[in-house]
Length: 457
Ligand SMILES: Nc1ncnc2c1ncn2[C@@H]1O[C@H](COP(=O)(O)OP(=O)(O)OP(=O)(O)O)[C@@H](O)[C@H]1O
Image (cartoon, rainbow, N blue to C red):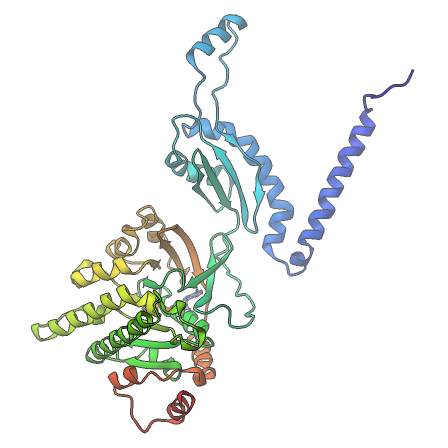
């Protein structure tokens, strides 16, 4: 008689387990090998930390859900029936939300969870801190993946502690710059084609200038015009003057520069209307005007009023910025506005401007009003995260947009490096006569000025 199936002996079972474990170890080594050679913490996490954490999550899931009030007791009727049948046996375990398989990431893992009837994603958001403590990971975030399913993402290693600056390959896509790293380990990208205007806030020494350095260093090699408004006498932005098409260093100049920028957008509007397109990106390549990135350092200097005589000027600056933000995106004018303290006390223009600045970056702040201004209207739950940024982690910020929020840290680009890059690409500085005239750039000019005129001709 032929036996089709036989029960494996204990020796055979151990052998197959051993082979599976060896295969997992070898494939793990192959996957993580290159990173291990670079002594990357992410590789060690994948090889050793992830399997241990998988076991920990599996072991603690049920008690964790029960402890956080996320377990649901079985239906009363079922409990009665099971009690009758089992003659006094202990009642069945409460139901806990079903957890999907754990997927590793470079710095942690994620898995989906199906909600039980009556549960909402907010119930899980409240339990995130308990999950992080139970699993001994750096942080846990809960987001809604689809109706009825939340995504639990854990970060085991804090990628913001020592962010790696990636090797720069070429200039990258137009108006898109990698300025740092996100908490998920992914690059932090500022893409002005997606989010055209940005508000960057932070207390002194929190990392605002370093982020602006990263932006200038990223945009300098691209075919874009950079324009600066730095009413602190140009102390910050004048370092990059050779790559700036115009720089206003006081409020009077800023008002004229903003008016010139409005004229530029009006002229572009005419061009688009004549070509029957809705924005400059609809124009043929050879007719498309150069994109203009306007960097405003210290917005309070533009808005604050010390006496009556300054009121009109501040009002004109506020109106200019708000109008530019309203019209600029379609016409290739983008705003990056930075400030130490941004509150409603700067005047009604600030709230109107904020509404137009869709990208928000909130570094460590010393007053809750500034964090509220930067994040409160988009993501109120990000406020707490912004207020807990430690002072020894300069450059760390909470990013918010209509899509959600996350923590990130900029790459440390020192001003000397940004200045060097700006000088290296000075020959790419477009000459925009209206803007140069507004800030009174000398007509005779330097070598750079002549070079710009030549190129333009
Ligand atoms: N991303 C970063 N990584 C590491 N260190 C950073 C980072 N950003 C800033 N720093 C450190 O913090 C210091 C202060 O940063 P920065 O000058 O950008 O602050 P700031 O907010 O512009 O201050 P202020 O408002 O006084 O000009 C820097 O000299 C640098 O040493």
